Image (cartoon, one colour):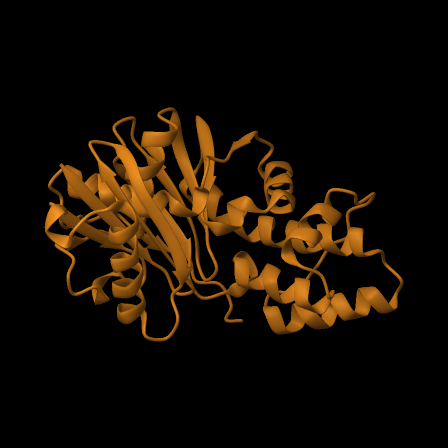
Length: 271
């Protein structure tokens, strides 16, 4: 049977179509303002590329901050539940998941069966998200990818005290004026984000294999900084930004159309 999972985030949309666990198609796009319309267009495109009709899809489950806006879906599950279901398929030994996206970061402790045991997130502060890294890269007049690579060449650790994107930009400009190298500033940015994310991970505690997912998991500079922050080796699955969509598809395949998870929201300062 064929199922679909759609992760509708605040900045990006990811969707997958699977058949008995085999990936048939996947696609991504900026969510935009009219998210529901973007989802429909992208899903239609996926169906055509996979040679399928809408009626071929047995069940569709969504997740993400705007997942409930998808009118043609059969159900919705929270991000944490989708993360758990998707990650344990890819890394069965996982017990702690760290999901860092454009607008939110979360830490999730799961059982060996993939059930969410505990969950904490930072949903109010950009300093622990991809948005902060994007903003600092623009300030340095670098791409995010180049800044990530530059951070790996840093020869020293420089503390970055800013707790929001606005003050972060000012601090980066100040470091530039002090003739601090872009490599060292890049590391400082990633270390700052890793510190915020690490504090959330410590709230739920971490054990066993730690897997990082979400769009920011593609950032090698952040992964290096987070590994130092937590003092552990971190695993990153292939296509880490599609894990939520895979988890939603897994829920669809299991007949799950809604799910509750325990939650503790950690509110940081507004950016």
